[in-house]
Image 1 (cartoon, rainbow, N blue to C red):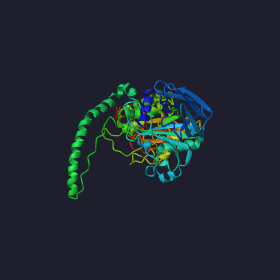
Image 2 (cartoon, rainbow, N blue to C red; image 1 turned 120 degrees about the vertical axis):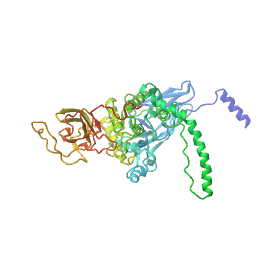
Image 3 (tube, rainbow, N blue to C red; image 1 turned 90 degrees about the vertical axis):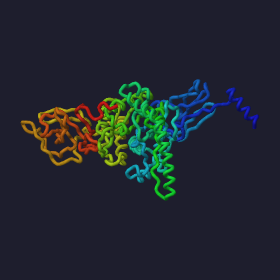
Image 4 (cartoon, one colour; image 1 turned 45 degrees about the vertical axis):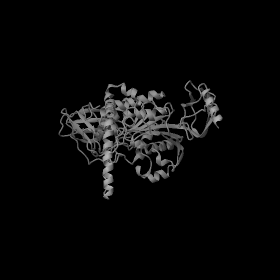
Length: 534
């Protein structure tokens, strides 16, 4: 036995032991490869070792570099499967049940992370029981926070069955299900999200450090790191006192006091700048996919003005690193929630505005409005069927060619002051503007000469406010007039600005005939709560 061990050790030192070709967990049974474009496959082997990847009659060769890393790019695979894929070097690996189809990356915080398990989703038991789609596979990335980019993402591919589905991202699942039904192709979902996280955690530190407006992000982190040793010592002191108090309570047959909470080390916290990019996004690069879906923003909601720069920076960062062009990036505008705005607390109205600005400023993005489907008392709305479906609508219309499909509610386009009225115009009319959840008929004061032709009384729109040059907003009267919305108030004789659904928990009343809600908006650019907050 000792002789054999010595032989092995000698062989290792001399380089005589064969290193096997190895693959990261992304390339395992159940893998879904992107159809119709470049699909990179990579791994490790001996330096200089030739590796051949074969699937669907296509073979690609690569030579491992000095660090033992290799990569091949499969080209324009046709949708279908299941298939087998072999990776051969000094050894041969076979990956089974491989699909070729449409791959999407799903990321964000809790509303993307929360699973399909019954209590998270409306009609959850029925949804789980019906989740039998063998051509939908999901890879869930294990959470890791890292100071530098990791090379591998831990996880495994799972086939969509009622047994596996409860752990799937609910929003991601409903997106994948609706997309699969519409296009009839396999769908792969790479799920990489973490609850309670900030956008800066998902952005590379290189990009964050390159923007002066983000300097305060690092200052907060540095302050937290500096304060951690004292916080940890305070916790240990409190824990020791608690242990004595708990023992005393037990002897007296009394309820023990609450145990103190241990502080989180900022170095491993999921709010660390760049930490989740390093641990859960970088290891996925350069895996080929069609696009990304995103639901995040709650934890950045006190800094809406900054988010208007941070969110586009994140999108451009990912696109640059993947180097597969401006891939579709579809996101959810923050849902409605009944909260009381306080200093340094949530301001969902401003976050929605920042997200709308991102839609307008960053090419090939899509936004699913959610301010009409949230649970006012629950930051995690259970009606994720609607949100996943709206994301799928955007993908179907903008990515998969269903050009006649309306995929967005009305989006504010412009305004015109007409005496005491403001006339608002919109894109995405979806067959015409309509009122939902509105009030009774409204009679607006018209300019001299009488009302516009065809301006019959219609149900009133709620959630509109109007202001003059004094910037004091008051409740407005509003109604639909053809493809426009007319807004006024007897309190504002010379109006200059309008806002719609500008609240944390607005009543959404403006829709199009396709049944999709208008995005909240404002016509002004005046300072708001988050102005200057970094």
